[in-house]
Length: 149
Image 1: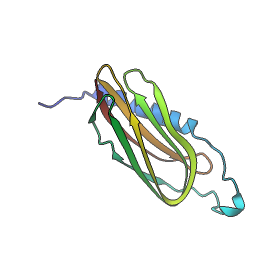
Image 2: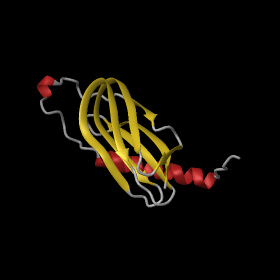
Image 3: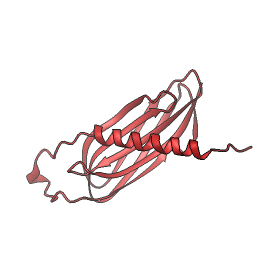
Image 4: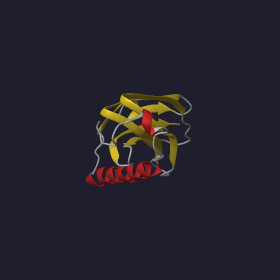
């Protein structure tokens, strides 16, 4: 028995994602590298491919159990600022899990375990956003999952 998602629900999810992505990009720490002499990268823009491998889309998680978050980021240049957030889609509350200037050439792996509790069935959205050295968006990915009481 499948669940039908109406066009309105799809648009609402996309609006939430875009709003969250904008929030994450605004919240990213736009600090420059500590020592420009050590990091001569010319401030060029490089797109970042963000691949979330865990959790899976629409994964079910029991309240109180650990959720493993794993994302691999790749770029032909430098990966600069990274923001990782969780949004409770019922209350629209957003929790920042990570926000830092990672400054990695070519690739970066993000892994973190979080424990979420819920007294009711709750939908969450994981959002991962990157910006380049000048604060311009360079990559995003999102994943939806469900916490069961």
